[in-house]
Image 1: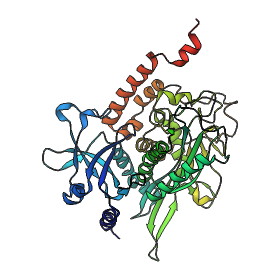
Image 2 (image 1 turned 90 degrees about the vertical axis):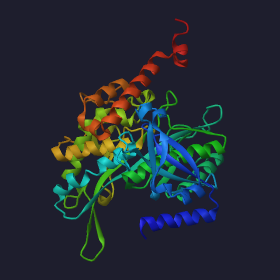
Image 3 (image 1 turned 180 degrees about the vertical axis):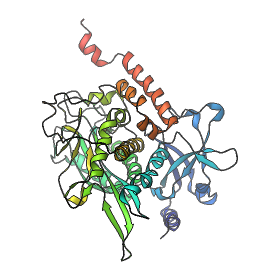
Image 4 (image 1 turned 135 degrees about the horizontal axis):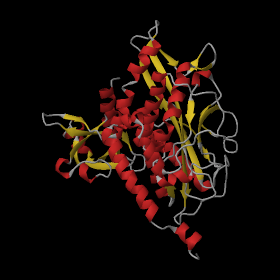
Length: 452
């Protein structure tokens, strides 16, 4: 079935289900979902899902659009059309953001993070095609995030005192099951959910998928979790470090590259490019990809850990990596290579947290890895010692948002993945965020200095 035929089938099903409105969702520079809602009848009748809907870009923080050039267009991606499980008469579709062109038609908006990821993904054939020697092959960047979050009661207190892999309470089991069922209804493939190390902390693990698909799924899952938490009188937070003395929330990302080519029997042959089948070990391409990630890690951190609070998680002793190193099965390193089936060979990039924009996070990690492949960057020997207690002179990730932003400014590869428009506006807004955080007293100031 063609994509258009599948879309028309979904529209017929939505009409039969009594869908009344369609949420047109688009993503800002910081990974937040924005909405414009239209009636389902208008969505069907006007056929504007083929033409786009106007929005005021000057009112969106981080878009960097002057008021005299504020007109933008959000263009629905038919493949993302889904009915919303927690609102039975609502459907949603994720949109790309475009700019009206003076000569007619639209062009991609340089500030759209979904478009930024598509742009980096489009470089896969050029970089990998030469290395593989396979004519007519296609390539995919596969990602599987582990999304961690805390669930709190209406007073922002913890809802349990449980720990790693403990069975959830009856209340939380009901909440998590409803989230799981909503994921199924919205076509999000996942592997497991479980209680994390800290009290009131949980994790959902995605199944591997193509990067754009998984970025869409990540922002959707955050929306699902927040909505079902609200239905239960709870608060879900993706803040990286909400509590002192407890583990923070990460978003470890499992990454690899795959090649698809036609086989002689008419099927499609998939090859995991991170696996050297003869050696049953990492391929040279995978090692170079890891080398690129390590080389660009300081700048990547500004994107994967984009809040001041992020740097209260990236400290030794709390399972968040600090040292720029890789290892096999070593959870204290920034990158580890999990053991298991060679067909699933991958690397796990462990510094990202759930406050990041997944579209930009996947774009910069891919750009860094591809740069490592092109330059044949050697990642060095794997590190197997406990880096929390014996790091020696191994370099560390930035210790603050300002330091990470400095690294981003100096890294042309990571800034190139974002594009000039996003990188300039991201830096501008995040510099101001850091300044505001620095000058505002907090409850910690009162606790530590009230009696000075």
